Amino acid sequence: MPTDRYGLSLSTQSDASATAYTEACNLLLTLYPGAGDAFDRAIEADPDFALAHAGKARLLQLSGNIPAAREAIATAAACPANEREASHIGVFQVLLDGNAFPAVCAHTERWPTDAMILATTANQLGLIGISGRAGRVQELAAFLDRLAPAYGDDWWFGAHHGMAVSEAGRHAEARRIVERSLAGNRHNGSVAHSYAHVCYEDGHPDEGIAFIRDWLPGYTRFGGMYGHLNWHLALFELHRGNADEGMRMFGDSFGAEDYPGPLPNKMFDAAAFLWRSELAGHKRDEARWAMLRDFAHASFPQPGLNLLDWHVALAEAVAGDTETLESRLRTIEDRAAQGRYGAGSTIPDAARAFAAFERKDFATAIDLLERLLPERERIGGSNAQIDLVEFTLLRAYILAGRRDTAEQLLGARRPGAVGAPVAGFH
Image (cartoon, rainbow, N blue to C red):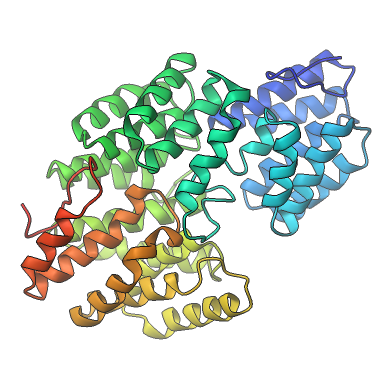
């Protein structure tokens, strides 16, 4: 019987189907394009291969096509499957309908190296990362620590494990793990991303720039990490005072009108860079903010994902559209009251703080951001993304004439991380 890359058996008698399925999984897990075609080839070679249908369902779900994903996972469930595959399919069924984290935990307890299942949780946009729970950064690191013995030096797992322990403050360990992963397979969008974060958390922007500029030419514009890696590069350039280069990358990649990657990534990256460039003292680009607000309204008319919601709030704050913003926040507060929004009041606090900052009500912005700061991880995102909250508070202190308080906040910044590109500290 064929097996996958980790030695787990595949219930297909077709070597061609197994080979295409393994290729599809590798493409999906390394964030390269082409997984859809490979899953289709696996299904064509064996229409009854359950995991090929399940893999296609996961890809459709990630692309936002939930009806097609439901159809594909229903097909998978109707196919013959061994015990592990049946559990695998069951996890994806739950993922499409509700909280899949308990199912992921149960599945990985028995089959820890089922990477397609672990991938639902292994990164900062996974089930722990977007949970809105306090302590989720340490929770993710601990979750992957427990699975690490099963994976050994595996390059795919190492990319995510290294990122998680980096976010948790274990910098030296993170660097060792990520460098080992990079040596195991350089052609992995996740490890390039993790290396960028290691450089950020270590306070080495020049190393981050050199690495990304060396790595990107071997990637593709249609890879899932292309825009986001350019965002990291733009942030490093902003830290070096080179906002013009960052804006060039905005237009060419992560803020481009023809952006080919996941649409939420464009919202995260474009809004954050525009806001942070202004915090650093650079002139506002009104046209790009207007484009981004239109994009947000067209692509994300309703709230849902905490990380996405606070980036949409940045665009609403700049537009000064209080009515639209408050309507969105009331929906979030209603869901939170019903236990259907894990981040609770943190997103409304952040959104109202950004709006207050934008209208130069620095006292209100400071009050809300100070309240948010101790539990800011709940809003979702990496340390690098969440730094926008701290940088906005720093700028508010400066503009409110509270430089001493700003200096205290800057002095309490987590050890090692790159400095704060905030006007008034240059």
